[in-house]
Length: 396
Ligand SMILES: Cc1cc2nc3c(=O)[nH]c(=O)nc-3n(C[C@H](O)[C@H](O)[C@H](O)COP(=O)(O)OP(=O)(O)OC[C@H]3O[C@@H](n4cnc5c(N)ncnc54)[C@H](O)[C@@H]3O)c2cc1C
Image (cartoon, rainbow, N blue to C red; front, side):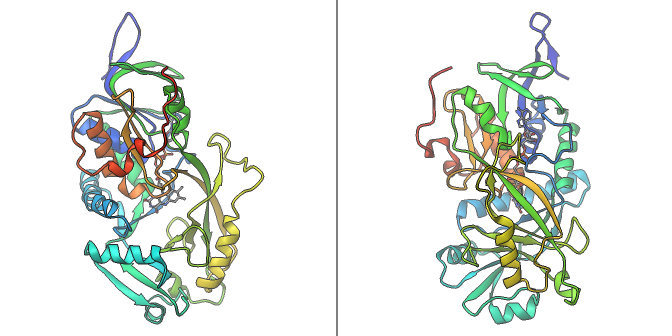
């Protein structure tokens, strides 16, 4: 239980985490597990579908061109299993994942080489072998696949709930429907919400697409771009064998159709018989007004129609269902995991750029370690705020 000081009316915690998406939830979970009296604040009533962490499924994989991500994934797989055991809930279904690309493409090659270098259980599949193994996918002669056998489908909604339940089990408090309106830095940071005032030694800001709203008043302008993503679900054409559809693995297509960004897909899950295929980019939006798309929305659905017609001809090239979700992109696609440059007891987890879910247990652990002023258990150099141009504004 939080303690309350009569004179000020503030409630005191060891740690406060702002934002109960998957990253904030895991940060709070690790803090509570480490014996910290922790409060997790969320602006919307839980569960909600207005951020980045909702929905049935996410891809989990080891395949990354950069070694630091693959190394983090080894820890993440272990921590996901730990949460499965603690919660008694199955959170992942092993499913191979294909990286599809042009043989000569440097980006495709970097995935392939990294899998070899890191000894990820994998197999190289030329287009002809792929056609036999996964008859739903049609590649051209100069295109090929590398299969990551460590991959799977994470059950995102179940994972978020399991982590929040375990956070409570370890003594944590969640207050949802309570928006943080202001943060006053100090040895004890003061957090004012729509309902209360709280104080804590450690503050973690994991506010997803809203991070800039909270960080700008703290003098920090991070280059974070909220994007609206169209999540599309596709059904098989009337005549095509459904067994082909059932055999579809997860995939990432690396700029295969000349597109600037990748296309990725997951087997049917949330809607029976409908395959989920999305474009890994979207339209810049204000997260509070995600339906106002501005004058030049990204033609993501048209890009996907073209992609599906060419590479997955057994699917109807018109999406059966469209939903929306938010990415928060950094300039380089790498995360922000760091302390505030001036207020060292404020830790920031942001900019997960559409690929952060699979890492959440390890990101939560790193944010917890940064909060407790411990040496992080992973290399956080790629995630430092100092990689961006000077971003501090005048002191508050
Ligand atoms: C369509 C789609 C597909 C994806 N696929 C994958 C995938 O296959 N694999 C993968 O690894 N990742 C994937 N991702 C990315 C992953 O889901 C995100 O990186 C992750 O969910 C980000 O979590 P978050 O906690 O940072 O953000 P969020 O989930 O948005 O959480 C932030 C929370 O902070 C709250 N908040 C904000 N401001 C305040 C405030 N002032 N007061 C209180 N609360 C506040 C928000 O309401 C929100 O709940 C995908 C994302 C999308 C959208």
